[in-house]
Each structure stands twice: as structure tokens, then as C-alpha cells.
Image (cartoon, rainbow, N blue to C red; front, top):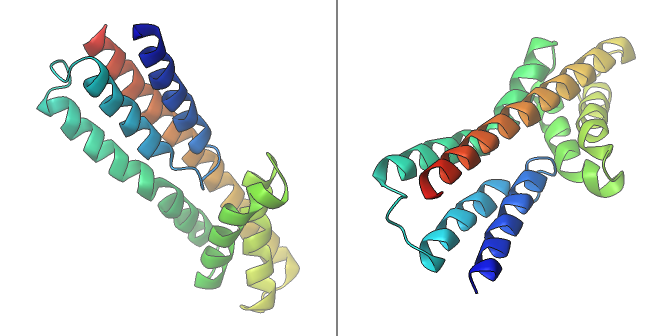
Length: 160
């Protein structure tokens, strides 16, 4: 039975990593679910209050990372509020329309289309804003991956 429990925990951790690449999957929730499953299947003893405070703070950061990185990246490259909304829509829709590549192409196209259609900016400026959205998204995914990796290592250090 112990092997089954570990397989469930590892599967949830795997889904957490996938969730940080595909924003519609709740990666942070899968991560917390893996930790809770460990506690329910084995024991909560090694998962002390400090662990849960670190997890809570990290989950909050993870939920904010995509939006904040996207908004900052778009703003830094001269984008409008419409571009932020467009790139956020592209972030959510992109992976479904263009699997794998849509995670980067979606926000780029969303920002460009919003800048041209709503903000009436020329294509050159809109492409620059779209590039800012794509770069910030890549940075966000890297940041979230590092946080997830750190939490996973912290978890295994405590339980093994």
C-alpha cells in the first residue's frame, strides 16, 4: 500500500510541474495536495508550522507570478491595459489553440492584437509589446519552476 501512496504523491507532484507550464492546470493546488496526501497517508509530524507557512507564502507568490510578470513585462515594453488583458487572455487560451507553443505564442498574439485593435498602436510598437509579454511569461515560468523545485526539495528533506 505504501508504494501506491507514494505513486499518488509523485503523480500529484508531476501534475504540479505540468500546471506551471500550462496555466489552466492548478499547479500550486496539486503541490499542496501532494503534501496533504503525504500527511494523510503517512503522518503530518515532519510537516511543521514553518513548512506550512513557507508553502502558504510560496503558493501566494505562484498564483500572482503569471499576472504580475505579464503586467510588468507588457508595461516595461510600452503596453497598455488592453495589452495586459489581451496577453492574459492569450495566456489562458493559447495552450488550447496551439498545444505546447501556445503558452508563449498566445500571450504574444493577445498583446499584439489588443494593442493594434483596441489601443490603435502601429504594428511595430505592438510587436514590441508582444515580445515583452512573451519574455515576461518565460521568466514567470522559470521563477515558478524554481519555487516548485525548492518546495519539493524542502518537502523531501523533511519527510525522508
